Length: 85
Image 1 (cartoon, rainbow, N blue to C red):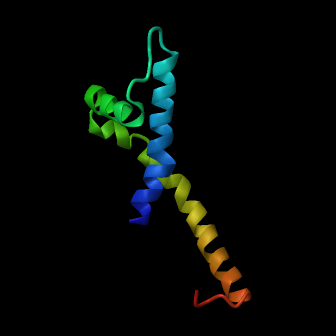
Image 2: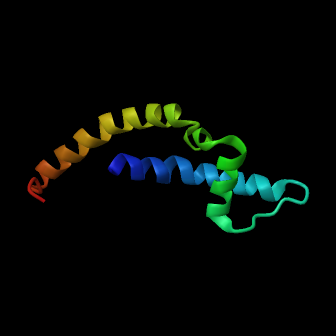
Image 3: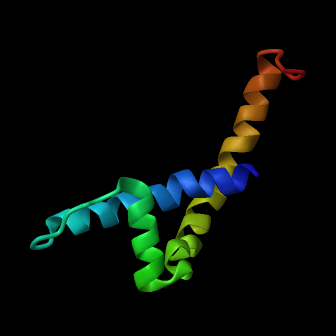
């Protein structure tokens, strides 16, 4: 579940935000309905797989971070005596 939440907040929301900015930047473009209207528009125009475009780079970016971050956090917790929190 954490992966889904992390993917959504780190990848999909910035993508939707960029799409909303691009809509406003076009001639006569305007954002009606906010976030959900933009998601529906993306799915309608490009299909549902468009929401997952960029998944591979996001996963490649998260791999090295987790390889460094998780052992570092565990070492800090054990050094501070917080193993059982």
